[in-house]
Image: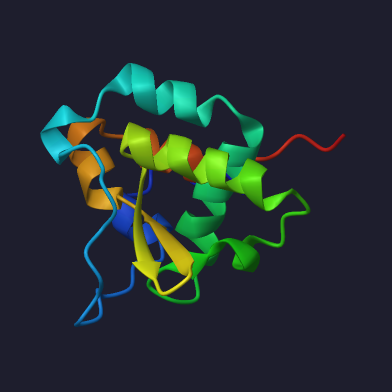
Length: 127
């Protein structure tokens, strides 16, 4: 079902930020997020799937790599998550040995209105 035209607040399952979170890993400041870097990161279907799943299916404030159920080597997933973080699409925090991610919805929506909505409306191609 397309979600186009609905406000982001109605599309994305936002959860409040819990107290006592670890500091985020290095990422661009909101005002430094560049559209070409975001689009390059999202041009990979796996990364687009990751972001869409975080937007629509989240069960907690942030999620570890294993939550996505992806059958990929850890090194490959690390690369994809880093590309998303470096572009400013997701925020990651280190919890012991595990990194957890969530989408920077407010930053992306402020910089590029409609982008989060388009990601949420995207459907993976059935191959």
